[in-house]
Length: 161
Image 1 (tube, rainbow, N blue to C red):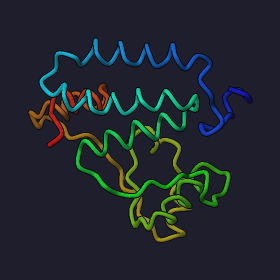
Image 2 (image 1 turned 60 degrees about the vertical axis):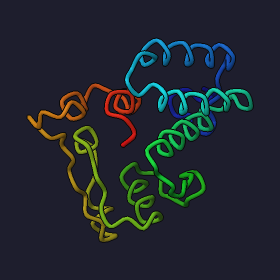
Image 3 (image 1 turned 120 degrees about the vertical axis):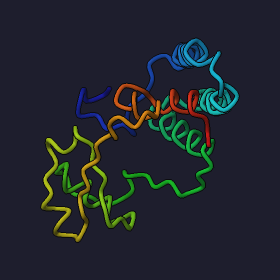
Image 4 (image 1 turned 90 degrees about the vertical axis):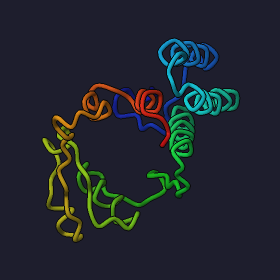
């Protein structure tokens, strides 16, 4: 990272893109290759691996993997790049500005974010901060492990529907 920890994602480059591509491919196949919904996971993986061929930018790969996963779930929305949206520098103000730019009326905030989030910038813009806690004792495998798993795990175990 050019500036260490303060480097923004859209400036971050992979040092060894070919090696990173190979590692991603091998790990995803190792973890999910025998899963019930491997075909859906494989489609997402193929899109991401193809993107490695034309970029060494972490932001490009993050965007590609997110859109590919959402597409596998049937999403067809619009992607906005936060770097193109005018925002203030403070973390909570920036999030509130992004919520306004996307037309949000509510901001869903997990337990980690609730520890640092300043609600005032949201309230000043009429945006309600909604605490999100994973459901308890639903018997649903997705929620049982939700705090410890990835979206790929959910896709591989629960499927795209």
